[in-house]
Image: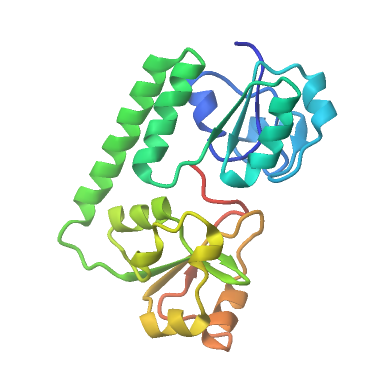
Length: 230
């Protein structure tokens, strides 16, 4: 398999670790730095199909049900497409194993999954017996969207307590919309923000949740202008 392209930033760091850099990427790809030098022929929910076909990919990789229309169009044009829809930490590790086998790098994928699991176990061990702050993970700011399942799991592994545990199993973002009142009532001690494709604005978070420019408790932890990726 010689030519592989990515429709999403998610997983972009997995492929180099087990196989090599993709030949083209999504416009939202920011990491690793060398990936930014690759041709950008898609956004997250749109793509330049003629440019993709001109690259003659052996395989196109995607993520999320939101890319179903892109995948359908590429398949109709005779392109091999593999779309993942991971929603939990275990599913992310399974994705790594499946991707490794698909690209002929099964042993490297196995080693990476073992390494990542060991790292998570070590973090969980460090947090054992420590105070567990109440955490709100803000995936989007308007409307307010709480974190997807794998993010909430990572919060717990790192020693936090998600304030909306019942929402983690909602795979669609629209089913994880919350109100500012609900966030205030849940009294988070820590807010972690990561907005898809946009840099977090701490003042916006404070104004939305508190109605003023003061940060609740420890305040939001900023993140890069990209969706959380593994």
